[in-house]
Length: 141
Image (cartoon, rainbow, N blue to C red):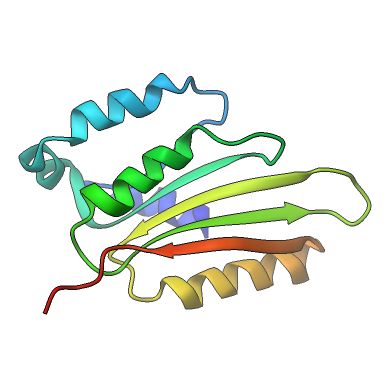
């Protein structure tokens, strides 16, 4: 769960989770890119397995999408890495919530994603839609 990821992040020497506040300005991506553009800095700061999470409303194109794509195509030079978008809706309410997920180094990404969505459906009665999942760069042989 997200709470488990956050608790785990506190007990590590390196960052293994970044949660992006939906009200944060789009310049946040520029700051993260500036810090993590240096390969040595990335190695010092990021754990081998890490996740980026970005909750928000579906009503607009989220600014973090380009940041997640940058992580998927330029930062994470390993397989597996994934960029997923999950939409949540409640049958009794209008509108949808969006969760952007970028995962690096998690070989169980797909089973974890399925388990997460099934739990949201069964426990909270939410309808789940996953409009896209993009795999990262393929592992070089």
